[in-house]
Image (cartoon, rainbow, N blue to C red; front, side, top):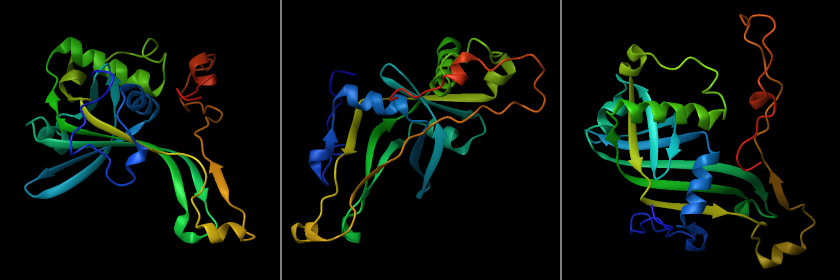
Length: 220
């Protein structure tokens, strides 16, 4: 992907266009911070939107799951797909009910997914999934066996036809409402890790790894 994604009529932000972003840095930063994407597709006239984990490697977005998954089976046929990712940054509390909103960062990616068949690329994608969730984890765990790899399908979608949409800042009240004696502003929301909980079958003497005890997301 170049410094900007491919802007098309399908990805151009039409509602509140000033919130649209098309630069690579913004799109990748949102993808790298988020945990879950929603994959939209149509099969036999029936639309589906499935939440799933994902990871980014350079200019490609990867999703994975069971080889028996309906979503992955259909996406591997090269049908059109829409992937969305959203981060919630705060609740925007206005003086009027109508102007309440949410500060958010989102990405929409359109295209056709490809089935990953190369074993090396498949392993890199599985490593990326693990490291996307908890950086540093891949080196500690058992890697997938051949049987597990056969049971897993990995698809990639080029991050080419994509756009971001972002809302920041204060509420946008009607001018006459600013005189109201009502609190207004933004309630920030963040994901903060709590104290790790030991597996009930964890052997004694195994300490919490530093990458878990010091866990943070890219934006923190």
